[in-house]
Image 1 (cartoon, rainbow, N blue to C red):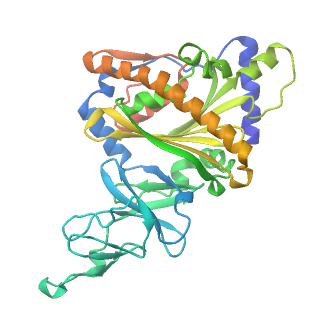
Image 2 (image 1 turned 180 degrees about the vertical axis):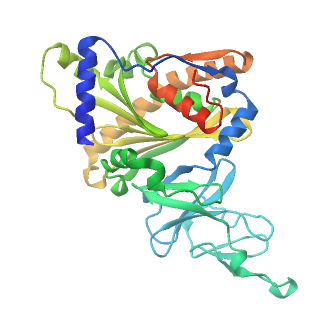
Image 3 (image 1 turned 135 degrees about the vertical axis):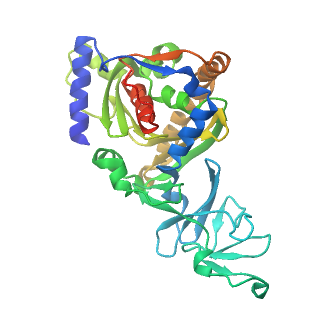
Amino acid sequence: MREVLSEVCAQLVGHVHAGTTQLAERDLLVPVSHFVSRARAAAELGLMRRLPLVVAHGSELKAAGEFITLNVLGKALIVVRQSDGTVTTLLNMCRHRGGKVEQRERGSNRYFTCQYHGWSYDRDGGALKAVPFRECFEPIDAGAHGLVRLQTEERHGFIFVNLSGEAGPPLSEYLGPEVDRALGAWDLQRSVIVLAEQFAVRINWKLVMDGAIDTMHPQFLHPDGVGRLVASNLGVFRQYGRHGQHFAARSRLVAMVKAGEAIEAGWKYVGSNLVIYPNAMMIAAPDHVEFWTVWPTPDDPGACSIQLRFLARPEILDTAMRARIQKSWDILVAAAQQEDWPMERYIQENSTGTPHGTYRYGRNEVSCQHLHRQLNQDLGEYSGV
């Protein structure tokens, strides 16, 4: 990652000197209906349920038996640390009559038991262990009546789940070597969650993703905040298959270049947003990472939920570091709630009221273009515009 950062820093310095930024070959026109259509939303949900999605961080499940329950894209899940230290994900749905076998948000269990009729399942793989009044049923094959188990892999500290119930390719193959290197540089498997919160907003999920990777708006929407820290319309994008990473010049880099000072590549001069397709993002800071997952709301194209997590290595989490991270959190949440999300709500309202026509993504909006092009390609609608 150090080599990539050096190359990117050199490119950004070149753009500062030339007054340019990275450009795509052409503008991209995205139909307004993509943000309001129920058919489009259903297609995107179907796609996402077939891909590995980040649902948790390993530090949430420290010891064997620890679990969390989640509702992800309409599916009720139990994510649990098994006896051998690995993590599995089980549908929180009894094989008898469909009740939840765990109703708490988190805890520790050896077995999961449905409170409706008492059917019980092992945390290790979800095997059926007990059926009250078993003599009253026809013979039940316990091996075929365990909780449905979903493909789960823990990598770089994050827990990825494929919701389809079918086996997909290995996670390392899906992420690819570039994303592996980008995540590996931060030692996230040893990190802990310092701050976390979930927000529900009346916005299509893609508009939230757009806002987080957009390169032009900081000086206009955040003139007294991020707009002072990051240069607008000055960036470099690297495509990693379905994924991508956008690098932005911090204002101090621009000032140093214009002053003729030498610059050593480092995160204090360059901001980075790694998009793990389709709905996760990692924004790098010098001493912590900001991790987003943006979840469409099933059956409502005009709503989504946003999970924000700040992670850091425990050995550097002294009082001063916690205070700095809290300050960064406060700045982020204030900007999101007071500036980004209100603007995205306006876009959503206008899209709903006028669902025809197109939105234009300029040649300098390379990172946003990539997300929409990739979705169209995966959904079989890619037109090359």
